[in-house]
Amino acid sequence: MVLVADELKRKRAEIGAKIEEVRAKIVSLERQQAAFDVVIPSYEPEYSPAGTPRAATWRKRQGVIEVSELLKDVDRRGFVLRTLREAGRPITTAECAKAFARETGLAEDDARLGQVANRFSQTLDRLARTNRVRRAG
Image (cartoon, rainbow, N blue to C red; front, side, top):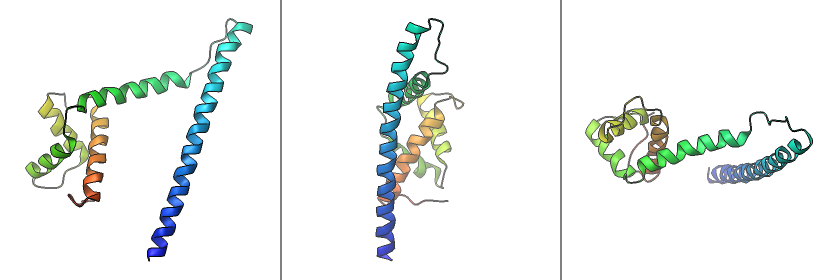
């Protein structure tokens, strides 16, 4: 049984390494593409790059920055444990995010709550790994 787990861990690590290689390749290709976008207008002034991925990436990062700012002074671990205790039953990460919204004065339909729920999910995963909470489903 241990051999199977070791093999699975090894395979997972290989896949993780491949993912990092692909990410590095994507960054390199995006830089090359951006260089072409700079040079092409000198030959064809009316050229406009269609849907540059940089703008989309910045919007995504900007949203992450906003959520990071929102959570920077929050003890997520303590908040999640307290919220679970107060609920007295298993709750979803969405319910945890709504409790956070109520406590901080955010609207319960705020667009950032999905990302907040994702952060609480990460916190719950860490708590489950340290046997502080159990997974409910």
